[in-house]
Length: 236
Image (cartoon, rainbow, N blue to C red; front, side):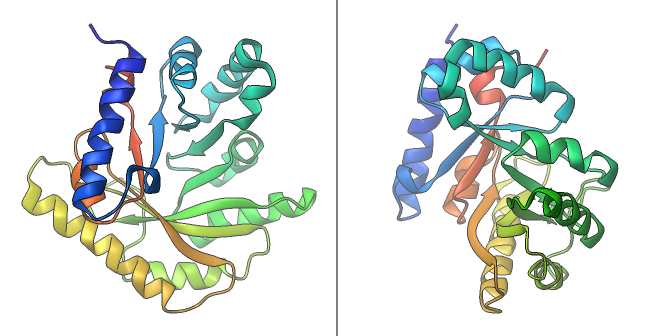
């Protein structure tokens, strides 16, 4: 049975092929390995294989994992980049800011305001992505693509937030005819926001695609993909 390094290599190969089909190179696509519910030992295997970006949606797991990885790798662990990819309640925002470098799931003004207030205390900034909902799934976070430009405009007023792009979860289906239009809608939304020329707001990152649909997402413009099962195997 292939290990983490072998699975990671296979994913990177598929990313490269999808990137070529979209007229880009593999170097233009960032890979976030989703390590939710995975032990630090498996994350360490991915680090040894060259992976540096990891995604989690349960902040409670992360401090312990980071401490274990610091024991394994010393200062090298400081170079790892941690993405928060889950729905974030405002009362948990302070703990997330303490342990993550990027928050991919900002989907409402109240949350953005809370993050900015917390960061103002230290004078630090954090990169965020605005989450849009194109899947139609109830209970899934994200603003509509119609409302995303207004949220971006509001976030441009916050000094401690750097809006770097959009994040979306594709429809929960394997049907390509439903996935492609959804990802294309996110790309078009990013283009509209770019045309606003908002200060502190760029649309340089499109975080779309997970283990089941990341090749299609890349073909439709994604340059950041979030992949867990295809790298680490089934979660315990």
